[in-house]
Image (tube, rainbow, N blue to C red; front, side):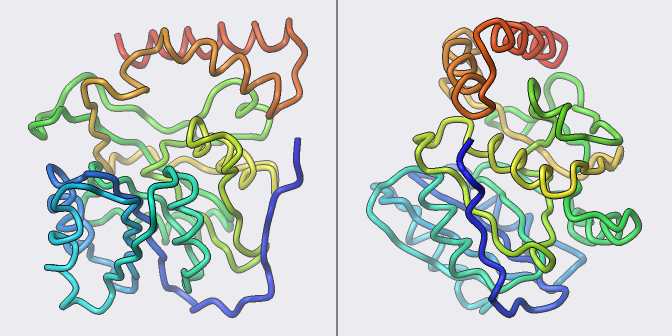
Length: 261
């Protein structure tokens, strides 16, 4: 594995949550997502929306919200979600950092309860349970309940952190960046593995505080296509041998069957 890229010489604003939101052709859902951030009961946040070369009306929608000075638009040529997120992380100023895709949603008390949960656990990383919605924002399937304790070993086969639910305290170890060499595939998995490896553990809040959108045609909606990608990921990112990687793929597959049944 390559060494985690961090920066720890920056002055971060205490209590501020930096929300990193990449967007590529997100006109269909981004308004609802931004509204879910505006509805937060915890108001000390900045929302950095990185438009990754959208060709639809995403930028116009984002600009319509910029009367709220907490919302910042960053535009770049299309480079993928990992590069977009890293662009936002570089420009972020908050003690806490959260990743939120432009089609997912937070419940109003997400930030307030997760910041308090992090303080209660004295942790650098926490996540929470989440429900799943379809393209019309209707609930589908069963909620995904967060594992109460997530260790570095746990993450070696299964990503137990729902990306939209993770919160990282940057004040102790500095900023951590996504691995762009993964070409935006499983980069969020790698990111939270890197974060958890800092202290070997993260904590999961059992309360459902977010909504993950399932979309037709997305990579995560077709598990068969991901089998080879996961195998390669286990070999290259975790340094597992062929047998270990196969075992990890089987564990991941079984967890997926339970998750999406």
